[in-house]
Length: 97
Image: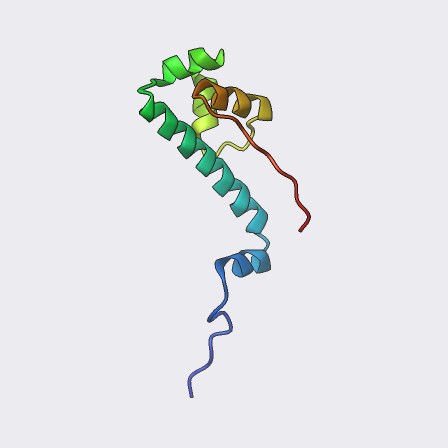
């Protein structure tokens, strides 16, 4: 008789929690979604990176860091300025587990 797979029917979330990488994966996903939404808004408004950086009153390299999903070192202030530059606003929420 074949061995039953203990992970059959489990979720990706449970697997990531089990191996201790859930929070890192979630942080990466949040940053990737924020970067995607900003880039999408920039495309919709036909905004170049140079023009976006100017609207944010920052450098093009700072904008590149913001749009890089691998770079987690982005401040809330920078995210707020980026959102405002494309006519959006940033919402942040803390909740109990």
